Image (cartoon, rainbow, N blue to C red; front, side, top):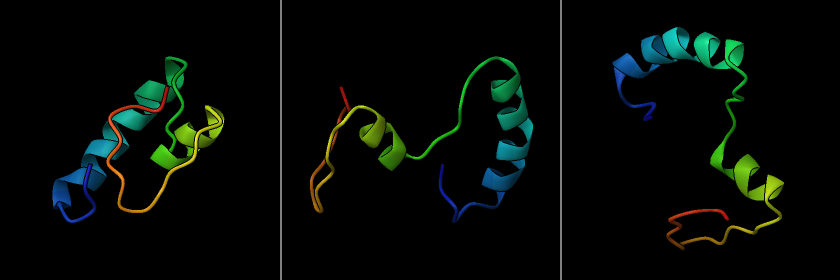
Length: 50
């Protein structure tokens, strides 16, 4: 998702409530890494956080 697109806000308004109702949590990439005890480093490309 990109904040530069007008459609992003309306899409988020539609699917975030559904995700929450179905047991999902909407978090940032940084939060996912922190949850998995991983560090992120500037200029690195990450394909996963496992």
